[in-house]
Length: 40
Image 1: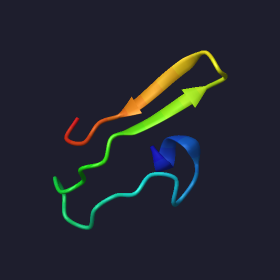
Image 2: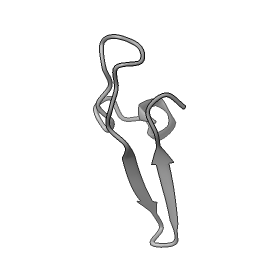
Image 3: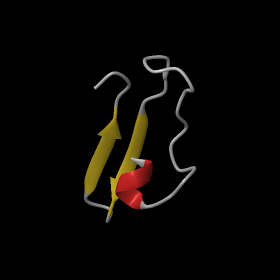
Image 4: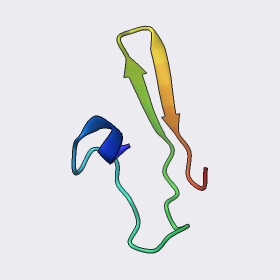
């Protein structure tokens, strides 16, 4: 997500792969939702 939006600290990531537990939801243009699910 960070590279997709060109921001360094938009989405928190874990130092160890597979340890991120946070689901991130983004509302795009008040019309769509973009979801970042851990492990996918």
